[in-house]
Image (cartoon, rainbow, N blue to C red; front, side, top):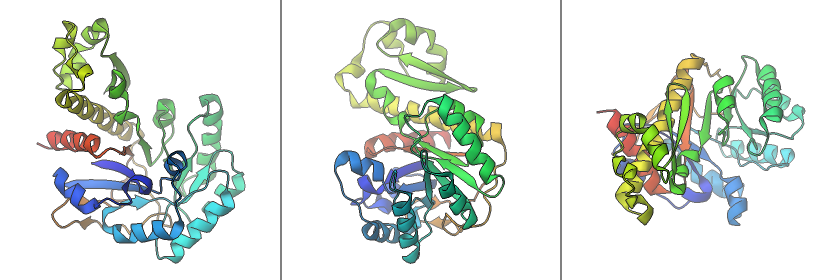
Length: 308
């Protein structure tokens, strides 16, 4: 199970207890500071509290990001060093719109796992050349994580070591679901009988029983939990399949030794899953981001069903 939670949402949660309840055997867990979410929620985050949270649950995390400040590269750097002074190993974050000297500094300082942020809102015509330059500067000395990266051409074409996306947990709430099959996405409009009928073979491959929608019966619109859970599980399954497809397309992506991630030793949580450290496998990872525990439970069910 590859999941991302942010401190902004999970700062009061008992993470080992939650992971144990989901019944998963293995997990890769990306911890984000949630700086962007905090701004939208009106929450103030401070670096010392974030450091204390990371120390408290350090055994849960595969990797964790710096408390970044968009349009504030100096403040972001200061937070990076403050967390390191706390004995932590945060991933630095470089944002679109910042001077290239910021990325050059991270590379020169020996960081080999770096997050690219503020990607949303940029048209592909602008994002593609920016990523071209970032990957060219890094060469083989570092790998990148793409924050909130939902741009499929970017994920498909650039050899990211990892990305995260929250799209999987929202699409089915608006009467659509996106299913992945062999390199392509199919959007099914659940209120459109013809859209459902055209995608029935793929829908049934995802073990979704939606034939009743073809007959005009739409019980999920009434908010039935069983229907929503089934759609959430299928959505998670689609993104898991997409991640595996991208990993196979890109092949081996090596994480060089350096800074920006915790020690590589895996750790088994008491009563819970084994947490894989960054670098345990040299291939692409797609983390599913979501603030709703119930939706992540559907994610866990998709993972458990695949492992049977």
